[in-house]
Amino acid sequence: MKDDNPARPIIQARQVNKRFGAFQALKNVSATFYEGQVTAIVGPSGSGKSTFLRTLNRLEAHDSGEIVIDGIELNSNLKNLDAIRREVGMVFQSFNLFSHLSILRNITLAPMRVRKMDRADAEVKARQLLERVGLQSQADKYPLQLSGGQQQRVAIARALAMDPKILLFDEPTSALDPEMVNEVLSVMRELAYSGITMLVVTHEMGFAREVADRIIFFDHGVILEDTTPDVFFSNPAHERAQVFLSQVRHGF
Amino acid sequence: MNWTRHNPGWTMFAAMIGLLVFLWGLAVPLSSAPAPIGPAAGQFVEGARITVWLTLIAGSAGVVIGIIAGLGKLSRFRPLRWLCDMYVWLIRGTPLLLQILFVWLVAPTILPEGFDLSDFACAAIALSLNVGAYNTECVRAGILAVPYGQIEAAHALGLTTLQTFIDVILPQSMRVALPALANNLASLVKDSSLAYAISVVELTMVGYRVQAESYQPVPVFITVAAIYLILTTAFTTLTAALEAQLAVGQRR
Ligand SMILES: Nc1ncnc2c1ncn2[C@@H]1O[C@H](COP(=O)(O)OP(=O)(O)O)[C@@H](O)[C@H]1O
Ligand SMILES: [Mg+2]
Image (tube, rainbow over all chains, first blue to last red; front, top):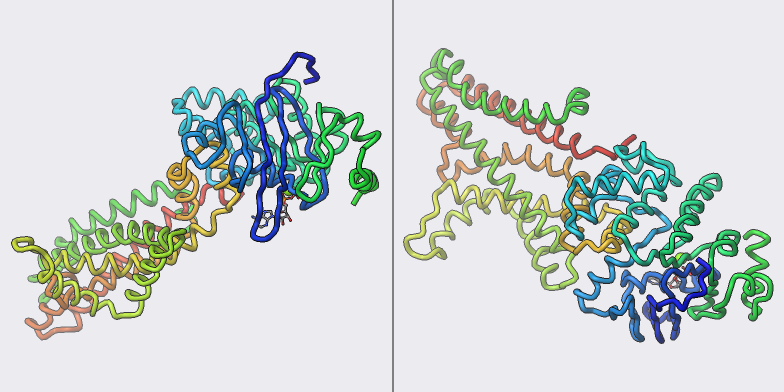
């Protein structure tokens, strides 16, 4: 949402470091994200995009620095973690639907367990969400009976069922056959205009340019550029970003 | 077996009822059989009941032990891992007969005064520990077979570790482990015969006694073998149906 009102910061990352053994995946990463903002995170493979996203809901614990989500500090305190995970939804490259549960149960599980919603209410809500992603007729199927694009739309509905304030997407279309990319992107586009805060790691530059309010370019574990899509795509400041863009434009 | 796969609920029900009816009604055909079987019908029925009880008790306890030790083997806590490894190593590396004798002889010496374990209880404990060790490996393999992405998805949705285990990991790992667990259960029906060594009057013991009194081993052992075959078939059908029940969503 292109919005001129002074927005409230909802994610604050300060000097975040993360290493895997001797390898430093994130180096003093700082960024503030505002409510309702849609940010595309781009950069070469292995540059730390996923790691950064995953530190924001503590699928990876950061080694040092500070992460504050909606006023709650993300640390080893389990109460904070529970509170934050209720607010932050995530959509994965490989969908990660629960393969033993029907589509409907995939969506109702977290509201029933975490929000203690009763089954009937959770199902009503799940069916509404399925309709929103265009899959109302698939409620009783199982994940493996759906195409990749359909599974990813279910995964989005599953995340939305928790009414998150923030949605993290880690390459949501990278595992899809080309003809299914658009059905997922159009659901994401609709979400972007609904006012939810989104951080999207993606290689879909068209989508980033059209939908994002902000582009962050990662390289070797640091944020090299943090700017608007217009500036990033027409006139990136760093040579690494120029090289990256020319590679993306000409295909890999 | 095709019918079993398509009607798992009914098959399970039928096998269970069949088992009960069999145990209940076994005395009727047996008592009309010629000597030496007819006069000993009551003993055969009692022996078969004890065998089924031992199998059900040790089978259920063995699954619980298998899940606990299987989880223990995957624990991050090293002493717990060692303990579970040790348990499996010890049980799988020694004869079942020795384990039964060990429990029977050692239990009275370590239990407080006035706390008596029956021979049956000793046999049940030894058989539980034994099948539990074999189940541990199956459960461990089953847990490792659950895609890690689904566990991360559950955490990202805010499910606690326990909720993730119960709703996501356990059902899927059981689905993988079930054929092997079923195998162990079928072996248990037969292994329970070793309880005769501590004078538990189960089916084999009954056969031994009846043939010793009648000097007619052939008809007696044919009868015993037939009862075992019916029991193992019932248990196998039961677990096959359970397997089909859990396989929902696995295939298209
Ligand atoms: N669990 C892990 N263990 C070890 N190294 C990891 C792990 N996760 C990521 N890395 C390493 O961290 C770097 C950044 O990874 P990632 O954040 O996934 O990059 P991107 O998403 O930008 O492609 C890569 O070099 C990767 O090999
Ligand atoms: Mg990545």
